Length: 140
Ligand code: AMP
Image (cartoon, rainbow, N blue to C red):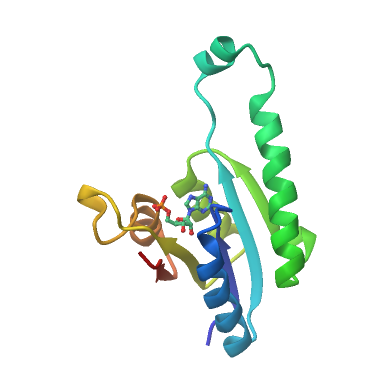
């Protein structure tokens, strides 16, 4: 069965439903669990426009705090919690490969046009991953 699960979380309230599935999957497989949240870099002009120098730094700090809280709830070691900056899809793929996970769990919104069946991030993860992916359908 699975030995190492990576839970990709957007840290939204909606992720509670996915968390319950992650917990169940971990209990079922006794796999190690790692967490990742990706902060997308902001375009340069937004810094100048908003006049705030370190918005990204603040976002990263907030993400670290929120991920640590989730890590606490899910009993995940600090060293297995990743806050990365970059394009969401490639960062998830990169970390998944570097730590050798065999399952990625993510949610799916499936709200918009072309992404009717899968959210765009879920879709990207599914197509790029070299391991299995569990896409948890979020309730309407
Ligand atoms: P979306 O395609 O934006 O509806 O997101 C679908 C799923 O992708 C979410 O439920 C998360 O599991 C994952 N996800 C979205 N954004 C991020 C992010 N910034 N970092 C990590 N995972 C994410």
